Length: 325
Image (cartoon, rainbow, N blue to C red; front, side):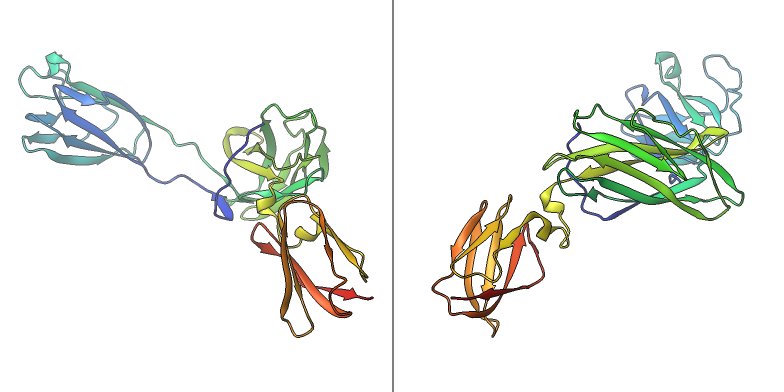
């Protein structure tokens, strides 16, 4: 089971990755890193840290032959002052070789290469909440949309990856009209998502969530005929009480009897603040319980009162309490 610190934001959107800028340090008869792998559209900035060097993409000093790079790259001229030498954008995939043309530098190992890989197409996106909460021992459900970002209909499948779970935990998922048993990790049926539209036909479930726990499952949505074209997301299922919604707080507590004559019982399994008000809204009693307890109300005048509970910073709606003697 994987326990995590949950993020503070409420919504994550997974879309196509942005351009990345990489750095190559130039100094001490070396380029660092000497071999760099990037994606199409990425940039590389060369930074001189010491010495007198250039970045030569044209003719190899060692062989006297052209580097024969995928496309012509303008070399960066000799520089002696430390600082940025220049930035190059690589838009064509392939391997780009270069060296330092200063006398003797290449023979001392001052050579480098940049490998530019195709960027995997991404035709889908998902909108996922930062966590999905349930009360302990109940079913925790994650339900979110999968969006087709293209101008054509796409046939999409789901792959689930999960850690070894506690024996009490059982996980399933549904994609379209088909719900898959715990042992199935890849949907056997694909769902067609129309061009530019979203599908709300995915649901993930964890049953019998242990108390105060979190569990992460990774779901990947990919094109049926192009598995590499996919979007993956970690989904957090949690029963941590600190992530209770206001609506869920009362389910963990029981205040009884109501009406009450002498002793009011409060059942709770997490630290709880109980506040009692009279008809005028004045606070007449406040108490914090670490666990289930009771309050003797025989000294209060008979009548109508109101109370609220506060758990982990969340307050329930005000409830009516009748005291009789």
